[in-house]
Image (tube, rainbow, N blue to C red; front, top):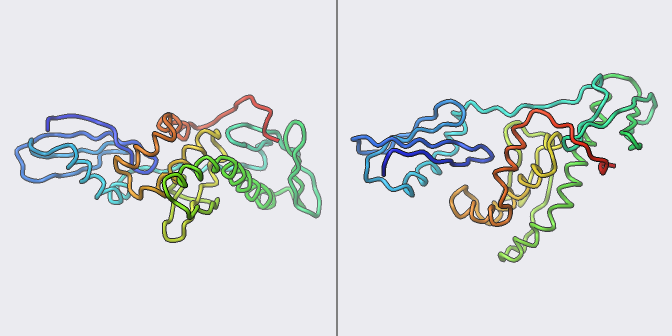
Length: 241
């Protein structure tokens, strides 16, 4: 092994791994900043050993990284909803029955009182529904892929608010959870997260085999992840309703 750098993904975060060869006996790992991991090792260590070492430390790395996912909110005074990165105008209307209705140029939100609390009681379930509905549309492709790999137990899909992950898969409950915040980003990002979690149905860890599966399904996966780093979108599209 020589001094080198390479990229490594933990969850949905891409890290730069900086390997420094020293006259030492063991491997040492340091997390520097948000996305830089420094590995100190002796010159006879193979890259495969370093990768196994990082995999074993993934949970610790996540806990010691200064990564925070920005929680985006829709305020009643904004005058629009963001649906998969696209801004749609909102018309507020007083009414006893809470409701959200699509119209040509956006949505009509009916609420008893024009407050943020009432607004959230309509908008948040709507966001969850839109994310789940889009995920259900996309999932057929990945259902077929895991069936071909010999998996008969197809996972259930759920959408909820998540503080530190875009998605998760539980082998115990056979459930995939998606973050409601995906509503603020393009559909390409949602599919990347969904593909990631379906790949975990076949491979539990983030090792080489996992990424071989994932990238065979979605070759532009890493490019799509970059969409989740963007602050805002205002794309021109009329197919939302």
